Image (cartoon, rainbow, N blue to C red; front, side, top):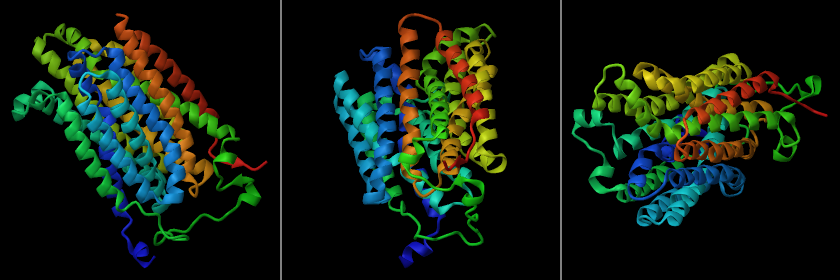
Length: 429
């Protein structure tokens, strides 16, 4: 116990970022869709693997949140890291067998991500009650930055290849070998980060921080509640619906951004760029701008929510994202606009992963944060199924991307309206 009392709480942040760096591999999926289609997979099949991973990820956040209370955050995070690594190794050895790829990378890997994902957020909020939004953002920032790193290692844009001479692991070793290499790397990162996933001692508070007085009797606002009571509140369903919309819109773009970028190259050439230049600009927007700002958005929106509150932050976030989803379709005619839109979509989408943990803690308390946020996070699974598969089906049908992006924009408008209705506190009945 004494050792826990003197542990530097910032070590938890370092461990969290290591874990999330590996878990963010799921957002690098667009780097694999083209190579997989090159060996016989359809667009719908590649998106089905992605969606299966997202669904398993979301479902097992609940299970991870429950198990960590019984078996400790460290142990459950370790288990998730092992499953993530094994899943990618299975996918690497599956070759062109679609069901095995779906099982390994999609389901087993997704289960591993789900078990590990909620742990750094739950542990971090307990160590940083004074900075819930910021620490939620920092805890998951690696998830966004991980996509950038894993994309560049696997399949870098040709312009970056020309600067570095590195053609990417997929070209050097083949797509299945990259899955195997990544499986080992992910396992190592999560295992190491898990070593500091330890809850603070009961009653511990950071130096200089005073816990707010319990005024629930005067205000009627409940401070802490478990999942059963949370599931009976309208705040839960408002948060759940907003998160589902944010996930649908963001994952639709993330899962298909490279394919859309290839479509955009024709429009870029109309501005006087050569075919190779147009392709470079398109892929940089998809593989660099969006994932980098996905990571930065987690930190930035977390900091904003600490300053202006989660309610205002959610309203601004979804209002901007609705505009960006509309602009994305029309950005195919100008690389500068495409870069700017990719930046904002990544930044806004990344913000969901700091805003919703903070909103969950604000509404339902920090004591059962791991379990409660697991239930809120199931909305991500539904968004992850609908968004990428919808965009993949639109492509396979030969339809315009407009039929995917514009409906997502309208849903973001609905989420912005819900943000107006949402109230962080829950009154006792």
